[in-house]
Length: 184
Image (cartoon, rainbow, N blue to C red; front, side):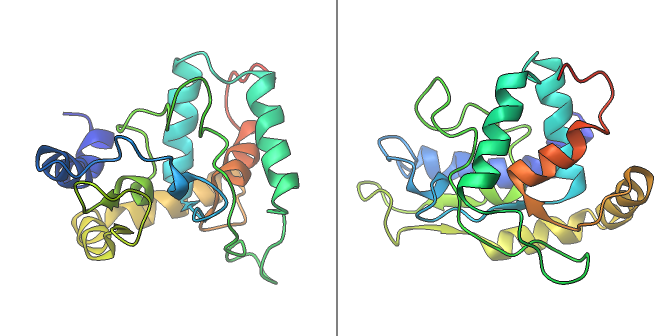
């Protein structure tokens, strides 16, 4: 089992367990991925893994870069806290949402941890208070992989990143020029 998959396994197991009980995102309009509810921030490691997936899948294309730039502009995601620690948490529609298929086209093996931990907890009601982030599960996952702190610090240093967590489009754009073999 790959290390990337292992880091996501507890989150995927929880999601699959809920789905087996009939509590899934099937039939949901995807509110959690839109500006109505999404303020997902990713670490450098999560963003790097997503870039690797996009490169391997042949999706690091000019159209994606334009979509990322448009998302940053549309939702004014360029604002940061003073200092280099983190971006302001703002809502935005994920640039991958609704891209060619209903829901998220990203495989679970590269989805950000926070996306995997946001689950439905009701068989019938979708996009309601029955959908929420399983923060305790995320904390447990973080405790299982303390080496990620060092890995994120290494990536920040090697790549000259000025953030610990950033919105998905900002993180990917920041890595775009630093990532080997990009096509745009």
